[in-house]
Image (cartoon, rainbow, N blue to C red; front, side):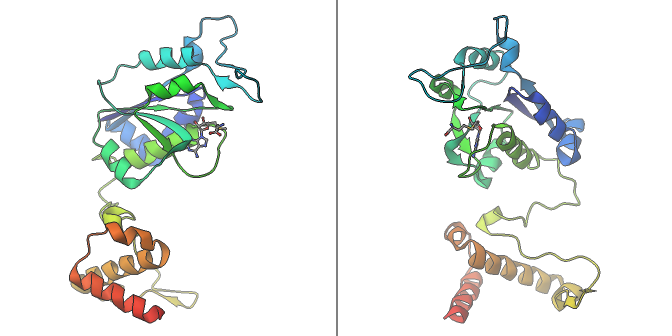
Length: 243
Ligand SMILES: C[S@@+](CC[C@H](N)C(=O)[O-])C[C@H]1O[C@@H](n2cnc3c(N)ncnc32)[C@H](O)[C@@H]1O
């Protein structure tokens, strides 16, 4: 069971997403748990103020450290468990990090909002994580991306019918093309080999398609991939076709 502890000013954004589809099923099956902690509940002033103007001047409001520290300290979690701070300045979130996180018992995620957070909040984090080089209004969408990517890797969350083994980024390759019925649609045919029933040939075709897709769309990934001599030969034939 992986327990996600989410520090957010907008817990409803987290709960709406987590009450649908596969993540919801994982929660019902007690494979994952998602708890939210609202810093506003840890304010002691009359207006429950979570932000203030920046020292030194400037536009926007900055999240105050006290309610975030208090929310963080209220979490019952295993010592040394990962604490992710969602920020566009963080390391890009990737599948390897999702794999590592899926083995944890507790994961804390801190979502910023408004202009950002007081620098001292950063000291709570073990990882600063970004979901891309763009700026969103808050950390909730990035946090949900992490919950989803990690949650589906927890054993028992994704049903047996969905295989994780050939997915994109497994073994640093993209997934090859997929087809379903009908075999012919609008003049577009499903490749013959997939209809052949020859499992060895199908596996070979899928591997080659994954290599081809990766070569064409994300050649940078191939550096990390576990390639056989046959894979390399196939990739060289693709390079020759390019010339
Ligand atoms: C408007 S942004 C603040 C951006 C901040 N002023 C800056 O320039 O780095 C508000 C919050 O949204 C979240 N956020 C925005 N874009 C993000 C991204 N690409 N990845 C992760 N979190 C992001 C962070 O939690 C951030 O504190």
